[in-house]
Length: 411
Image (spheres, rainbow, N blue to C red):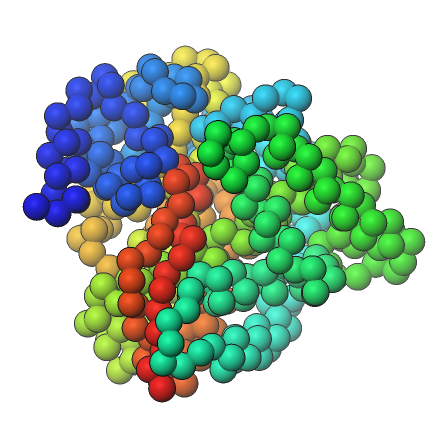
């Protein structure tokens, strides 16, 4: 019996009152799906009274998630956007943890870099980098797709957006990984103090860049935009760090893990890869389906600002409410055959991966652009990329991602 079959039996044995879908190991061993299937079926707005993160509500169906996500007045992000509560000592503010008008002002400050005009200019650069990365990959020997393609492409893009020293670009990946890691003994980060020490090094590095940009003419990079905007130029250091982390993680994890997931899904569903090869015009549709099927950010958390009703359940002011995008993207009431990967499905852009409302992912069009260009170039080069081992997933209930995917390119 397969592990997933065993887990499917186990997910029906656990009493609903004891079910905690936030356990990172379920995401790491890919056994989470049966638990979300059960919640959507039996208790779509589910109260978990006892978890390592305290009590919380799980919202698991598409319509309920949209209802919460689009009502920022009733469901606030100001106390955090992850199920993990960051201790006050280590708290950093950022515009995703704000409401209007300050949220709007700070978001609008950096939005030009992912606007249509900027993306048009970036496409040529992205295409040249994708070609260089693909041309430089080994042939007829195994390598880690996550490191050599997914991380490398997204980190090069992040370095460009920040105008960050290119030779140090892997620091951006490192800081992103640290920022989304919940401290735990035996893991990469074993304490909140260690996490803060590493992120303070991030702040010091970027403060040097800030001091250069604020004394120079404005340019179209994220540091210059913030340094010269009245909405952000007087930020406290902790708020600057919070916005840096937001932009680094947002620019890194969504694209990086969709690049890996896309290759994995095409291997698992070879008929879809043949369909794409036969009709490359399906690339944009395939990109949307990859992002839905991967759901690189598994959840977003809100805190009830007022007493509310969601899915017939009474939510009290102060309750922690977790929107499981990863579950809503498999809701068959909205998405037909949602557990299948189909690159030409109807309404393919109707997914939750970028969120809704005022906090909808700022860089979603850039993420789609990078994925589109990558698949266009893979098809154009007629690369035969074979997965030669099991993917290694990370033990996170927030970033739904991978640490390794062993592949080989046939010469």
